[in-house]
Length: 267
Image (cartoon, rainbow, N blue to C red; front, side, top):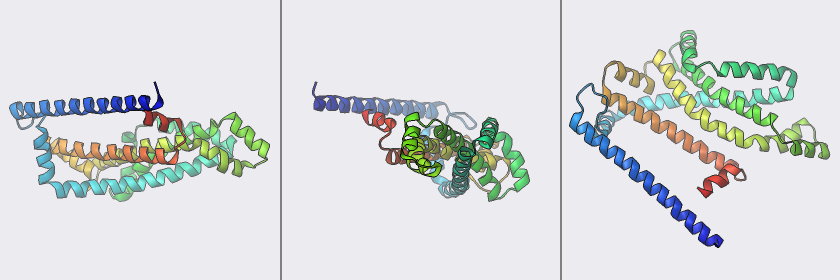
């Protein structure tokens, strides 16, 4: 089979996969819609998707305002967490003796659920924007720190030998050889950190806030307002999905040479 035939077969395979996936999702939504219209009663679990969309449209101004509030908290925390993780990862790499202890401590702290830290942080920092941003910062900080530190320490032997042959110091080796080697892991960690920051900001809003998508979800849950609850869930899922997609695209653009990009193209 020629390369052109192989590419053509791959394109047909991808189209078939997309068609099957779309048909499957459509079937699920149609079944859900039929069930919701036939059996849903106030306080039930599964309102019809059209009812959820109607709820979103009726309260669009409130949902938009709450979503933007949570996104701003998550964005501030995400930016701070990434910068802090990058600086600390480089310091830990430069000063290995101290860095090993800090790395193990970071792994232990990473195992603590954000939902367990949020009440203490909100109680200490208050109910305003800052406490939500700090919780989001912690959620974004640890994935980036662990992935970047691990990638820097796993730099290939040949890369390090090249630095020795060229006689470069630590800084030049880091800049020209080790950071490019670690860039795919860093870019992949952003796909985890961004949605984690958004979810953490929502969790912090559960503890105490006057606005935000997490607060809207909490009110809907305790008020047994099921369409409103699903509307908040749809919005939060959409935002986190978009964040994963955006940073996945960033990773592909920033590391076009990486094997994961070739695998994505083949799919």
